Length: 105
Image (cartoon, rainbow, N blue to C red; front, side):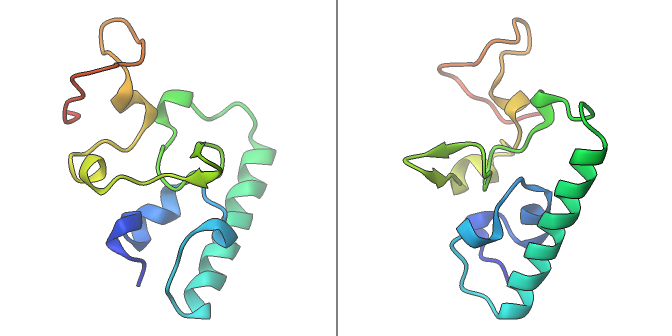
C-alpha cells in the first residue's frame, strides 16, 4: 500500500498529485489506479472550472505546490491535521501564518 510518508492511499487520492512524480514503492497495480484517478480528476476539473476554493486545496503531494521541484509532505504536520491551505491561514485575517501553526478544528 501507499506509505504513511505520503499520508496513505485514501489521502493521496484526495491530493493534486502526478503519479509519475510520487515516490512510491508499490506494485504497478496501484500506480495504474493512481494514474487513472489522476486522469479522472483532470477531466472533472476541466469540465467544472472555478468550482475549487483555493483554501480547500490539499498542500501535500501536490503537483503544483513544490519545494526544490518536488512535491512536499511533512508527516508531523499531516499527523497534526494540517492538510489544506486553510490550515495555514490566520482564521481572523485570512493571511498566511508565519508562526504558531495550530491543529485545525
